[in-house]
Image (tube, rainbow, N blue to C red; front, side, top):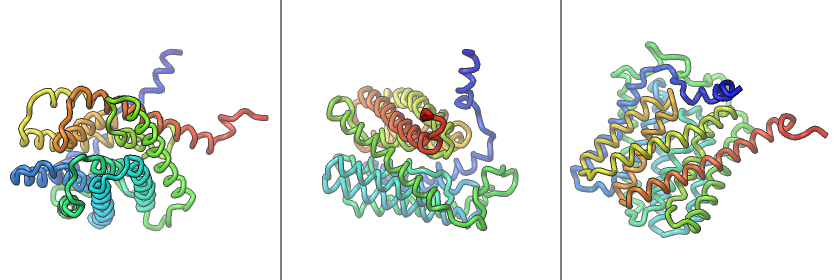
Length: 357
């Protein structure tokens, strides 16, 4: 019986098939490297976080046609640039963390709905939540106009790289597998409104609950500082519409974060110069894109140190307390996600959960 129970967790250790992942991984990493090294040469690494978030545009549109990739990059670039600008504006105005949390949850719901309607990959709102909340939490923000310019320039660069990546073999041809192709054909029609409403509610209430729990925890426990980390962890499991996969994704997020924090702890335990930080961020971004469609636990092991290095570059803080805080905040976010997943399951399958009268 014990063996059969352990088999339930076997998907956590499965490795999906390779789908020429090195090609979009290279494109995405290059989209991060160019603005980062440019800012390093200009001596403005304090602006790197804005460029990084704009460069997240590159994670969309992998192995799509040039036309579809252009559409997805335009949508993602606008969303990420707007998110960075909104976050910078709230930080510039020094608005309440509760306002930031509410705005972030609204942005999450709007973008997740757009991403689903446009059949974008990845779905969900992890990147826009991170962009709004992390920038909005900065203690020494730049003017919103400068944040807009930097994020927008990085997004445009990724868009341009996406339009020439077919030259190195990116696209739905060759040995592309079925999952690389759009999940809906152009003739499939619009996404049902009910599905969009469910998506919006899930991606609003999950980060909202995580944000509330995170802010309460921050006021009670001094070591906790970034409630938005819980909000990011709360939406990561929701990208799959199957409840079982959402449950696994929540576990994968926690496991990946724990291993990623160990990696970050190793890297941050050694004094690093600016160019070394940039090199590590680019390498970690490449590795993230290599594994994100194959095993999320492994991908999260690279996502976590990438995010931590980005924030540490702008606002350094004591390493070990910061790592412990991020661990606790991830657990809070995963708990919030599991609550939303459970509520959704009960609403969809009441006959399975609720006792019959």
